Length: 359
Image (cartoon, rainbow, N blue to C red; front, side, top):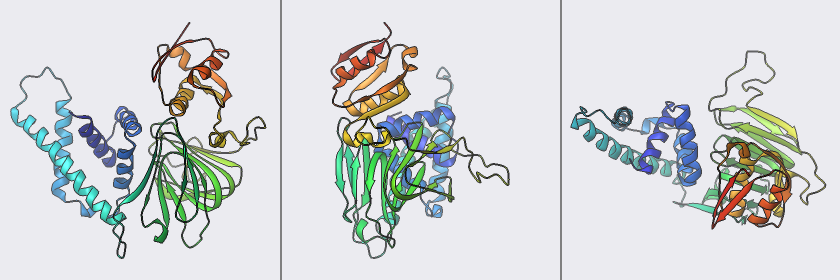
């Protein structure tokens, strides 16, 4: 089964709530590898008019998923009837047809609203090893970090709400317009501007989504409970755990309301006088990479985006080493030599591949 078909199957299971934890982890990895697919999923997940989906398509998807389970079972079973393989091929075709049809429905709902002339989105993609400045039509300024993608409708300036979709990390300076609110959609939360400068980090496949407020105010609502809203004050940061799809409700009368304290945390930003941007959360906009008591494994993900390399570990113990420091103008080899002064390890660089192991 091709990788694209596998993505559609996992997306179908996620939308129906039947995804296993292992499949959830697999899909997160695929979203990271194919950010455009994550955006498609976000649009699919936002569909209000579920009745627009023909029941025959739903039946075909259920058939596909059923026979996918059969097909991925014991491969040594030679008694499987040919009709099953035929249904698998037919099911996959139906799933692709369903996906194309549904995307067409969504494109009409989101883009071709009555009176709108736009029929496409604007999309800015930032490759690893770079970052870019974006000026939106309303004068708002955005800096996109490496490995990020920002999408917004071509009718952005005339829409009732100025909406953008973010996969990755971005620093925002938004021109406030009370009549046309600015909303950022990420995989796990929506962030609404209330006149502000702030940073949002929402990379697919990572453990947390973060929003750090520098000036003004922002309002955060969660995908699984849009009625629950949190307003941040200046120099505050919210961290939302991504790995928990459905946040359990707390007992009645709890001060935390609908959300458990273990699933999100609000803290004050800490001033760091040793970096130009004052806060570690926005240091990247000045080409600084600040890491404080981070595991080598988590730091490696940031280094992959910063230096446009792929880092692998041959020893799990090294991945768990905790590191603290700042990178400014170092290249990848210089950065690795700095880290060797903190914890012992050896490395090999082969073009854009980096292998790290024990001494």
